[in-house]
Amino acid sequence: MKRNKLDKIQLSEIMYFSKCGVYTLALLKGDKQEIIEHSLENLELMLPDKTFFRIHRGFLVNLEEIEEILPGRSPNKVILSDGSKLPVSKRKRRALIAQIDPV
Image (cartoon, rainbow, N blue to C red; front, side):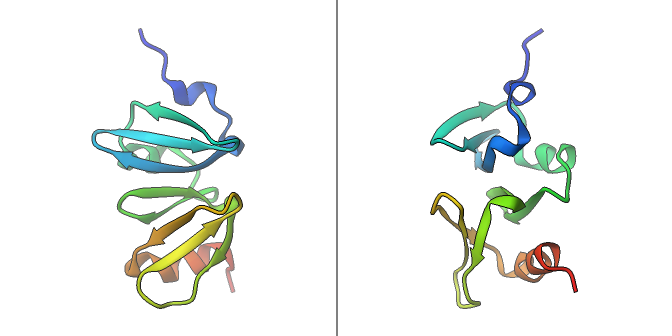
């Protein structure tokens, strides 16, 4: 049985996941990448929701890596600790803010 690469990756090393067809690309600290044999939808169900959040149909982000949520003009974006800018869907923006900064 083929071992899944996700088993070998520490969650704290993951910056975000990006949808790549039926597979998912894991973007790791240190500019490393791994192809994961799970869909983004499956990963969203498998990973802890206090650590990972679906910000867009194509991205699942490690909340601890978000440095800034850019102001609410379209397109909404987050900036990660490595400087990456990722889109945030309009529908997910409020939930993301509530997840990061609960009142």
